[in-house]
Image 1 (cartoon, helix red, strand yellow):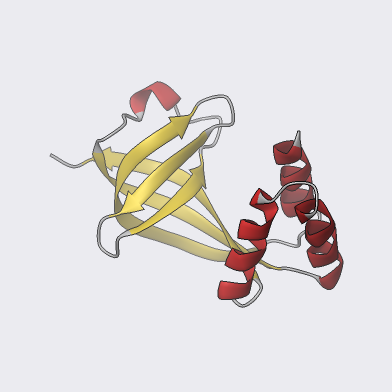
Image 2: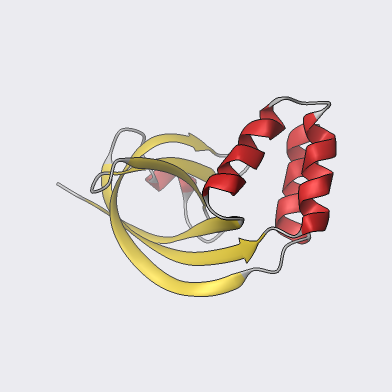
Length: 123
């Protein structure tokens, strides 16, 4: 239940700004077909992140533990004081939310969203 509240807060209450496209070499660590998300490792900088997979992409074509040259559409949003207060209130009920708040603090109050728009297997 908390996950849907977080999604509602983060995705709907924020004003997302386009940062354009980027390409990265990634390895798929995990995928969540129900929520159309993939957990990826950027092999150049060693950072793990989650990307949304649009409905036009076939989730079955994305394989765990496989390397890809991936193209992303990148969006950013600034966390408002109102959203921060909402998250702090949720953190009292779910300690996992505190990790989200710590991440927000480390990024200077900016949240990144990655949409996977293309992926070519690396052989």
